[in-house]
Image 1: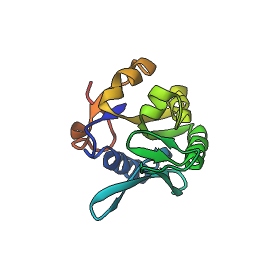
Image 2 (image 1 turned 90 degrees about the vertical axis):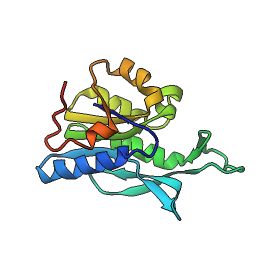
Image 3 (image 1 turned 60 degrees about the horizontal axis):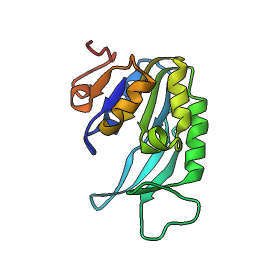
Length: 169
């Protein structure tokens, strides 16, 4: 399932809720969440959270005028390459599992072949009961080429769903 929605619409919150409910039902939950980090109401960073171990690392910080050498940047964010490597290890070990969550596959992965490319491979293995992949609306076409049978779910609709995650076709 490709979960999409506007920026700050609650995609990560939906994934957190599903992970909690799946664990409560005894499911093996694996993958990564990307929770935002706020300072005085302003999003200043993004963390990476391993859903199996609970380990959390800083993934990205707001891009500044001066970036350190070796950083991987988009127009808004600079990503920690060590955390990306760690995240790829987490995703490479994620399957098999009952619920795979990859939050998110964005421009790094889907346009630049960088970032969490192990997330693309993990989803493609189909070694899970369900997979939920967060994808920005503007990248849905690219994701749908990778997974043509995936269902697209808007985050607003997903908030109305409850366990056991049976989307309507």
